[in-house]
Length: 234
Image (tube, rainbow, N blue to C red):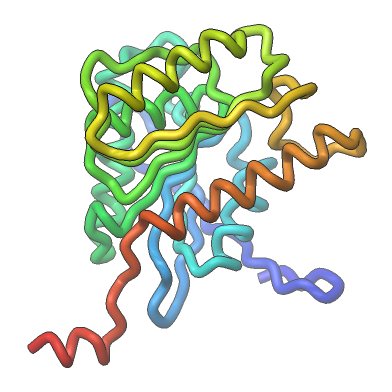
């Protein structure tokens, strides 16, 4: 652990696991003692495992979540990988959490950039507690309905995802999925709205988008029962 002024910071554990594409997939983990609130898979933007993941994982730990972050591009260019390959990589990450006793409804998923695109695909493929796509890049609408409650967070000035297209996506998912979905657009900001910024609108969007992400997880990720609760179930 690293101790900053007034702040207890957990240094994530770095390791490599074999991806579905045969190459090593780099991951970072924070494991918590006691009875964690839940578990979260974080899909980073390319190169974000060292720079962005530690902050996100520590912020999740503050809310009681164990976490496992991965940069899908570390196993080969994720932009050129097929969707089924990326989904198999996520299945490997979910299996790692399952090996620690986490069931699907106790797991949330948060994706940034390309990871945000994959998070939407995961929501259509798996039935998890919750999924969040933050500033997704190269978004593709799933062919079928979603099985995981999904939240999409977008900057209205994102040149790759026009606000009108985002609204149409939200309407399609909301009408065609049995689970709750929600799309939020932040005015006056682009794709980097989730990063710290001195600009007023960007700062407000970064703060509000994180609060909304945590609330989405808290409302939908099933908490792990405490040992005493398990005793009363017998």
